[in-house]
Image (tube, rainbow, N blue to C red; front, side, top):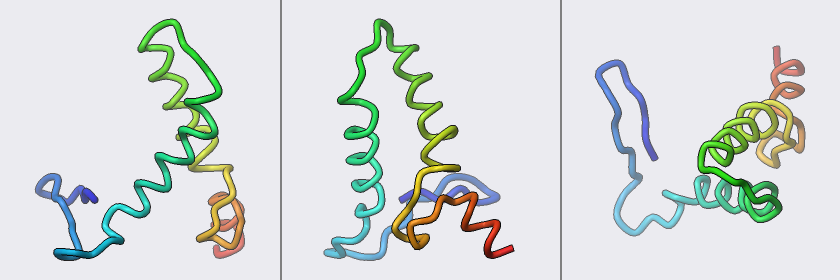
Length: 82
């Protein structure tokens, strides 16, 4: 995993042999492939990049329900917690 600190970008790993290092990223990539990539085709790389950007910032981050949040969207979860 990567962490952006005040002095730059750092790689964060929990240790040798820990199988959970990539679990969150692997889950995300599986989800984006199933929900977006395998369902569409694009004529240009730019169109694919825009579709991925819109999926992440317009759906996945704000509206998609996540199991880690009790099956609430991040927006709904933040409203409830705040």
